[in-house]
Amino acid sequence: MLEIRNLSKIYPNGIHALDNFSLDVGVGESVAIIGGSGCGKSTLLRLLSGLETPSRGESRLDGRVLREPDAQLNMVFQEPRLLPWLTVADNIGFGLRHLPSAERRARIDNVLEAIGLANYGPRWVKELSGGQAQRVALARGLVTRPAVLLLDEPFSALDAMTRTELQDHLLGLWNSQQTTMLLVTHDIEEAAVMADRIIVMQPFPGRIFEEVRVDLPYPRDRTSGEVSDLKRHLSNLLTRSLSEGRKLNRA
Image 1 (cartoon, rainbow, N blue to C red):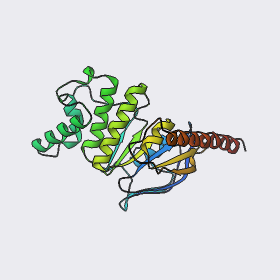
Image 2 (cartoon, one colour):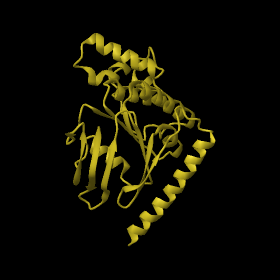
Image 3 (cartoon, helix red, strand yellow):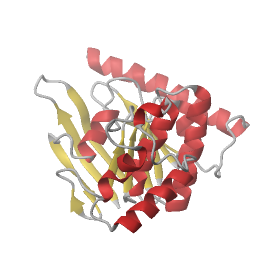
């Protein structure tokens, strides 16, 4: 499915953002990437999406080398990035203009209902709350039915209740569509409830510190002892990864 081999990024100013990152992600798998600032999480997604060019290494989707933006990979950013001069429906359907109008409308209506915004299609972006706007961004990412959905901290700007609600909505959509997800997040609980595997990153430069497989069934109870134990384990790994990263940076 998604194969990442020795991916590295050194910017022109000398910042070594990502070093020798390798990972295989299977069909329908949900993988979360966590780590402190400077560990290359967002850089990785930008490389995969074709928004940045790697300094070394490559990534492949179904054997095809990813060198530029690809229709089979969609990205959802921290901010909704909606077009204010278009309606909600037109924002969601922006990438469906090649489809017949009836099919385009059906897809838009289906995804609006799935995210809890049925009948919101005619509304303007300015009429939406922050949580509603981010739901529309998720719908836009999913409506084209991509093979891989890249998520760059999509819920970080939302309040805790809205964030939890949208996490559950996304899990429901992922379960029904079996879209492969690669989620970058600072939120340990978000990783614990949403991922089959969790990659803990080490900074300076960004590299894989540890991989954690999560064998808990979905949906996961955020208050359960198993999730609490997992969060504690991840917190300890993050502390160690940051400490070792600082040591390497000083060496």
